[in-house]
Length: 137
Image (cartoon, rainbow, N blue to C red; front, side, top):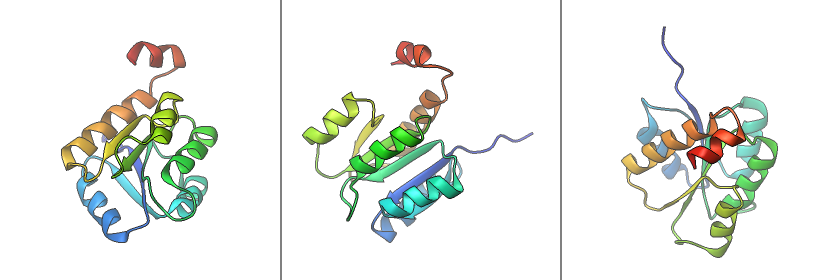
């Protein structure tokens, strides 16, 4: 009996970044891509559920924090990670503290770091209740 790979929605506005993320996650995750935040919301609605969403910060329209805030409200069991080349922004820090973002990763993000962060985030999101989550945190 084989276990299904965790489903991860990768979101960016640059197709080459999405291709690289798919290659990085291949074999450990079932990676689905969305070109921008609006496409990500459509994928979540129509192709979900996803175990995690990993998104770029800067995108036209909704940015990564806005997208992950929406994901947190509508799909709270989905782990949420943010990729940013901007360092720790005040908005990103506030969103992490509020529980909107599980982890913020610096771009460029080494492949092992992304895979490991997603593995931890997916395991954390799968914990059965908020009390168990508080203990693990």
